[in-house]
Amino acid sequence: MTKIFLYDTTLRDGTQREGISLSVDDKLKITQRLDEFGIDYIEGGWPGSNPKDAEYFRRAASLNLQYAKVTAFGSTRRKGVRPEEDKNLQLLIEANTPAVTLVGKSWDLHVTDVLEVRLEENLAMVGESVAYCKSQNREVIYDAEHFFDGYKANPEYALATIKAAAVNQADWVVLCDTNGGSLPWEIEEIMAEVKTAVGPNVQIGIHTHDDGECGVANSLAGVRAGATQVQGTINGYGERVANANLCSLIPDLQLKMGYDCVPPEKLATLTELSRYVAEVANLDLDDHQPFVGTSAFAHKGGIHVAAMLKNPLSYQHIEPELVGNQQRSVVSELSGRGNLVDKAHQFGLNTESLDLRKALTQIKTLEAQGFTFEGAEASVELMLRRTHPAYVPPFEVIDYSVSVHQRRGRGLNAEAIVKVRVGPKRMHTVAEGNGPVNALDAALRKALVDVYPQLSSIKLVDYKVRILDGENATAATTRVLIDTRQGNQSWSTVGASPNIIEASWQALADSMEYALLGN
Image 1 (cartoon, rainbow, N blue to C red):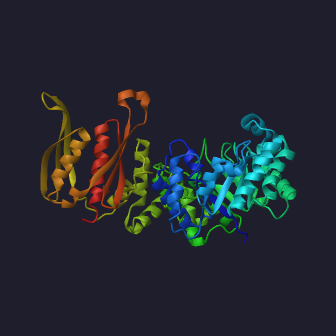
Image 2: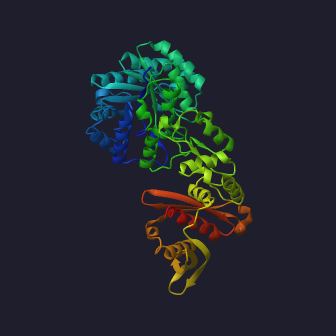
Image 3: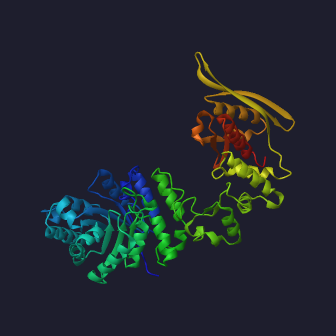
C-alpha cells in the first residue's frame, strides 16, 4: 500500500481557533500522544512568534519520541534581508528540530498587496530561504500559502513559486487552500497539473481549510491526484471554521482508499486520541463528529436497530471498533422493540423475563409528555427492570413536600419533608438545603442512608433544566436531567412535568434507585 505521511498542525494552526489556548505542558502532552498514535510530523509552533512556542521547542528536544519528527514553522525571509541575517529564520534554525516548515506566498495578490514586493523578489525570498534551511541540515517542507487561489488567478506565477522551492531542494512542496473555498474537483485538477509541471521527483502535500465544508473532501481529492503528505488537525481545530480533520481523513484514507497511514492497532485508538486532545484543550467534543463522536454509530430508528441486530453492517459504513468507537442504540419515541432488546443486552438483562412491549409503550407515552431518554440511560434500565415480575424497588416513596423561606437573619433557604418505605420500615425525614432540589436530595438521603450506607458516597454532579414549551410561560413543561457519580461510575436520569419540583424529584428518585441496583 502507498504510504501517506501525516502532518499534524494542531499545536499551531489548531490553536488559532477561537477558544483554544494551550500551555506549554498541554502542547508537550499532546505531542507525546500524537507520537504514540503514529503521526509522522508534528508542527509544534512558530518559534519567532511568541515566547511560549520558543519554550515548547526547548523542552520538546528532551521528549523521547519514537516515531514523529517535531517541526518548527516560520515564514520565508523578509524582503531585502539575507536569510542568514533574518531573525525569524534564525529562530527557526535555533529551534533545533529535524524538520522545518517554511510558508511563502504563491498568490500574486498577496505578493503585491500584502508583502508589497515585486513578483521576482518573492521568488528569490522563497528559493533563498529554502536553500538556507537546507544548508543547515534540515528537512524542509515548503507550504505554498493560498496556492489554489493563486493558481486560479495566475497559474504561471503560482507554479513559479513552488518551482523556486523545488529547485532549491525542498523535501516537500505542500499546496495550501488557505482560504478554504476551493472545491474537490478544482483541487484534483490543479494538483494533477502541478504534478505534471514539477515532475515525479518532487514530493507533494496538501493542506486544506474547511470554510466551504470541503476540507476533508479536498484533501482526499489531493491524494487522488498525487499528494503523499496530508496536513490537518485533530478534531479539525483551526482558524475561522476549521482545518481538515485528521480524525476523518485518516480512516477515510486507510479504510476507504487503501492507503497506509498508521498501523491498524493505532487506528483503533483514534477515538481515544480525539477525546484526549479535546480534554486537554478544554473543549466539548462534538458528539456528532464522524468516526470518533459518541453519536457516530448511535442508532435511533427502530427499523435500523432491528436490521442491525441481524447484521451490524446493514446501517454502518465501517465497524466502529476499527477506530476505537462503539455501536449504540438510542431509546426514544422512534424506537422499536429492537432498540430495547439491544439496550437490555447492553445492561446484561435477560429479555425473556422482561415485558418489552410494556416498556416501549411507556417510553413513547412519556416522551410525548416531555421526557427524553437519549441522554438518560439509567432511567431506561430502571424502566426495563421494573417490568420484571420479581423486581422489588429498594424503596417506595409515600409522599414529599418542599417549601422555600426568606427568614430574618438566615436569608433564603429551603426545607424538604420526605416519607419513604423500605421493606416494613417507614421513614419520615426533614432536611434543609440551599434550594428545593438540594433540600429534597438531602432529605431522601437522610431517610435511606441508615439502610443503604453506600448512598453517602454518591454525588449529584450536574443538573440540567430545559423549558420545552416556552410559549406557556410559567406553566411550561420542564425537563430535568440529573447526572450522578459514585467513584468511577456515572449515570443520568430524567424527569419532566409542568412543575419543576416534580420533574426534579422524578430524576432524583430514579438516580437514587439506580444507585441501589443489586442491593
